[in-house]
Length: 140
Image (tube, rainbow, N blue to C red; front, side):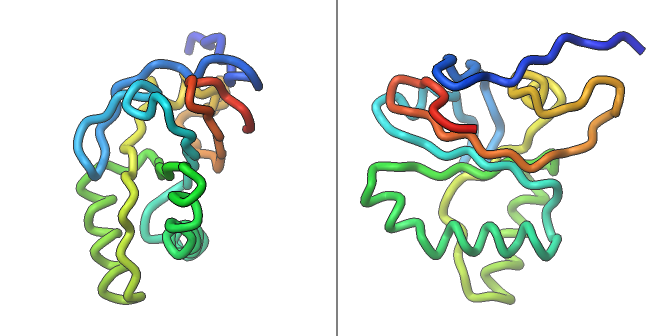
């Protein structure tokens, strides 16, 4: 297996350009958020206890983020249909409606963000990126 050179964007770097599939339809990052701050956070898998708690926690504070002019985006390697079923489950079982988009990541997206360890397959990782209105990474 050929190892790829994978670089996580560093503070001050441009967030990598990418087209993604989400629960809210196709999106382009960072372009669709030009002029806005956004938080992109990843989780290992849908329907897991810790990830569900994280999503509910972000949603319960969504108005605080929005009042600060910050958009929230979730992400994992699960497919869009899995994300949609999980969001439905959270609403039905926990009474919380997830209103932010969730990206269905693939190896290409994960590689652009430096989230796959070379030679370790597609193990998912938890990561957070805070991106400024100009598309620059300000925190990882």
